[in-house]
Length: 243
Ligand code: SF4
Ligand code: FES
Image (cartoon, rainbow, N blue to C red; front, side, top):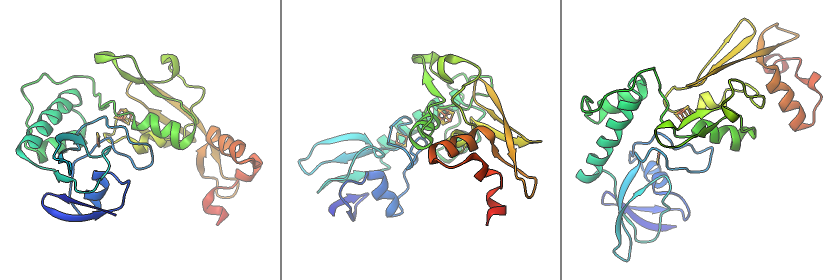
């Protein structure tokens, strides 16, 4: 355990955890968008900025989702300086993604009204945090999508910018992990449709041989069977009917 203070509160935190983790464990709220415990920390949105002072007296701003606790660390999560930077970051995100309910709500909570920057059009809700791509690679093990290009052209795409990604198994993990609702998923009439900011793909779904419900994309079932070394026929019955 190491002793730190957050906003003046004395806290004992396990070695190796991030400042964000220690804050959350002690019910201290730090706003985040790109943080996702299922994947390695990335530090894309910068909203979790905090001010720190080390035991040696060094002061600076750090992203709390990346910075690990250390003995004698003093953390401030909501100073005037932090609030000003956070508001500016949210204003930029709002201009980029004016149609995202999540960003709108965040702007409201932080008193950001927009108006100084011209909002982008086209219902783009992607903040380029790469949560989707990191989940696809690190959790699913597929790497069907990634961020490509640089600067203002940076975007989420399938490999080589093709409309279709052969690697994609249609599991929808990207949609679940997206913090801003930029990726949607719909299951209808035996087909799953996943819509990313710049393309969409459809996947045939597997029908349960007992209840007749379509319960998972065929490609996902085949992938799970292959990676687990089990016969694909083991998945003829949906999880509900197997219980
Ligand atoms: S689609 Fe969502 S998860 Fe993927 S980069 Fe954009 S905001 Fe992040
Ligand atoms: S949550 Fe830390 S940079 Fe996004």
